[in-house]
Amino acid sequence: MSRGPVPSRSGRGHPRLAFAREVITSARAQGVTSLVLFLVLLGATCLVLLTAGQGAATQAAVLSQVEDRGTRTITVRAANAPQDFTSRLVSDLATYDVVESATGFGAPVDVTAAATPGGTRVSARAVTGDLGPDAPAWAADPANDAAPGLPARALATGDAMETLGIPQDTGAVRTVEDGPEYLVTDTLTLPEQLSSQTGTILIPVPLTADTPLTSLIVTADAPEDVDLVTALVRSALIGVPVEDLTVDSPAALADLHQAISGELTAANRTLILATFAASAAASIVLVFTVVLLHRRDYGRRRALGATRPIIAGLVTAQVFFIAVLATAFGTAGAWTLLTLTHQPLPPRDFFGAVALGITTSATLAAVAPALWAAHRDPLTELRVP
Image (cartoon, rainbow, N blue to C red; front, top):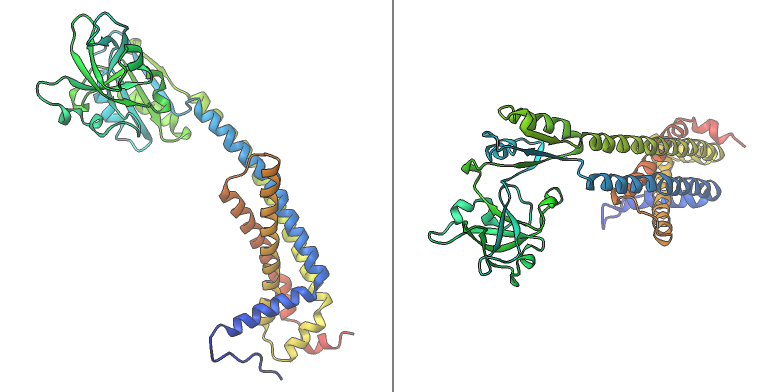
């Protein structure tokens, strides 16, 4: 009885390399069945990526478009200057984890370039809260930035400075009818939820100033949080007369977002699971066929001293090796085809998940026939003609 390969004195990896070579040799010796399994798994990979993968790409594009329409933003407008509608609401709402941002705006006033009091006018508004990632650091705490004897600093959005006739990005503006003067020191690109304020001069004020507001814009952290955030906003507005408020909640768009996400995800999940099941079933059939056709070979290995775990591992590793090759070629082929035909590409993690899923399902499907081959009586198998 053979004692099996002798480990190399030069390295401990020799037995593993010998086992890997044996797996490759067995796969090549079983050329027809190995090729059929390879083609089945390659086809399954391409099928999922070219169908469900495109569905995932389409879903991402559709949800992105729905997201652009403001599915997460609640806008509150107040009339008649209600007493409790102040910057305190911004600081209170910003403390909730489900709130991504909260921004309040004061009443608009007209300003002109300080050098040309009779020039073109634009609106200016006090602002408090989150102005997005492009806002300068001083805007978050304007109280600490104030300099004695100098006008308060302000921000220009959009083409406000060009409209005022100020060629530079900085300059002084004055409120119409000899109001206060402000020094515009920065320009700002507003985030999507605040785009309605583009083309204005914004004057940051501290949250602690309890500044009167005329509008409040609150963005939920995710579309599914819109209902909760809307409830939080309404709760914070309890002290404000209802007749003075207009609340625009995108609940319908948020529901649409969730409906689209759910329907497309369910359709993709069904197709993916069906493909995985079909590839696993094909793996079981093919591996059982291999075991039956080569039962004498496995019996001879058992008679020569191969243990049951070695036989089971050899069969399973052979399927794993073929599955890795098939999914790698299938993924590369699907990516190339989608790119050449200018089709939307699924997310990168989708490619990896499909390859991993098909490889895993095929390998697990091979366990049962591998155990069956490992537990056959070698003497009985050697009598098979």
